[in-house]
Image 1 (cartoon, helix red, strand yellow):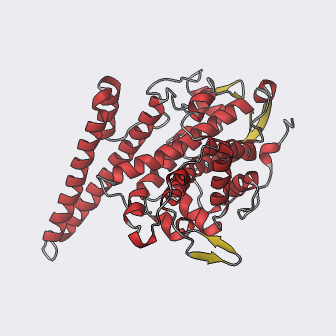
Image 2 (cartoon, rainbow, N blue to C red):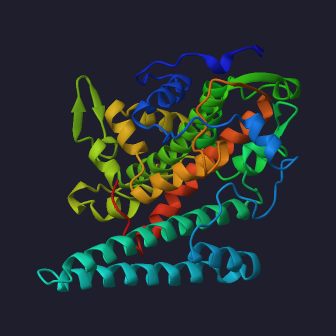
Image 3 (cartoon, helix red, strand yellow):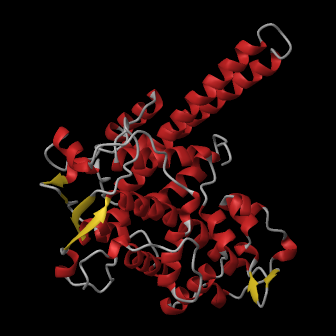
Length: 391
């Protein structure tokens, strides 16, 4: 196995789409030039940050990279820690209160329109909306944290705390737990994504897993963020794939010599799964025999999923992977900034090379893909109670 600079390859500027799933995963990573993390002043390296922080990688139940910034987030943290069975009830109550506060401020602004107090109430409504957005991001983060806790996986703490003598080491690996949440055909796609972005094959030996490699800090950050978006995309695309199988929606779009199904059209990726279900007209639904709904042959299912995913063109891919809400975008930025850099100086964007093991990189990528999948769920959950701002 090549342990050299496999992570430093120059990826193509546009996605590659063909029948090869590894090319699909590599093309997916390359296609995210449209999203860049926010950069601030040139940050210190992970090694320097490590010397200023903790001396060991502190995995713990509530040792997350991003700390809650709102009273709502802190309250939900305490509820989850002490009254776990009441967590979802508390989440729903807090979301309803936030929606009521935001709507009340907007109503007062509208009532004051044209009066001497119009500017004051407009400013109050803006501040209330900003306050609610921060709180909603904390709620989404706690929902994601809850999903990780269900599979007994603690989020990786700040990477600066996981550097020992210039080497980044993340332990325990938690591969089995992080892979257990997927169907087999989806897991196959994720393994090929891992191969594409870090060069570690699914059939690699233990020796290969623990072999050391080098990666630039900037590239590590882009791989992590792209893997979150990949997990978000897979969740969205898989639900649409299942819906298409169950409804047997006919092909209504054509692109050259190939065919694009209704659910692969870019406009369908702008809506959540509930909206997609409510938007299906009865005239488009054909009866499906029971033995066509579920296929016990996993290889055939994986092949169907592969054909469905590789049927996305560049525009459809980017729109399906695009986060639907501004709150989700901000949460992704803040989480990646806290994990890879720090909350004060911003996202780590450096050419400095870090030594690490393939096992640590795999752990990081698996967590990122799961984070993206859970983010999709959290966004849907919150939007049903508190209307999020469209991205």
